[in-house]
Length: 202
Image 1: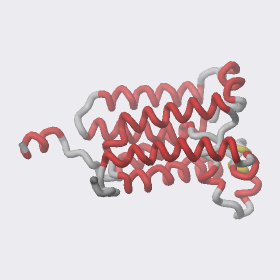
Image 2: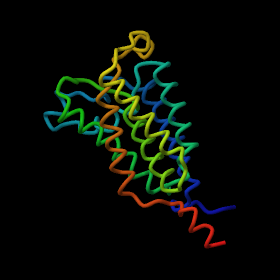
Image 3: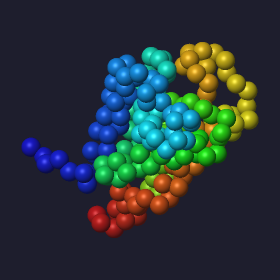
């Protein structure tokens, strides 16, 4: 039996699975007002755990399932790029980055829940790792994130989607997530060596 190791890049996928499970448990078994981001409460310097727990909460089944599917898909694509301990640092940093952006730079947002901003950050982190490994898919992913964030910020609202997720689309949260992901993707070391290094090792 193989020994569990936080250094094994293959273990990163476990964290993505666990986050999906936590999202399900908090959304269905715990009261939303107690764990969502609340500007008035956080602004008083109390219940700062909301800066983290808000990202696990969802408005309903469609919102939850959509985000979990996206989370696990991103995990399948990119979890191999980093070791488990690196993901354990980066994902909470993403959560804090998005929450801090909302709190200090988006005063119009009073309440916030959902993984949307985190998902944008994870895609950017994965795209940068792809580029490090000389995979052109990284350029495509970065372009898609730029287009998506631009549409969120400057494009029209989509009432149908808002009705399905039972909430407003958090445009600025997606922007803050993408920017935080860009910073983390540039400063964290990569697990995978460059392709030319692999050839030399052979």
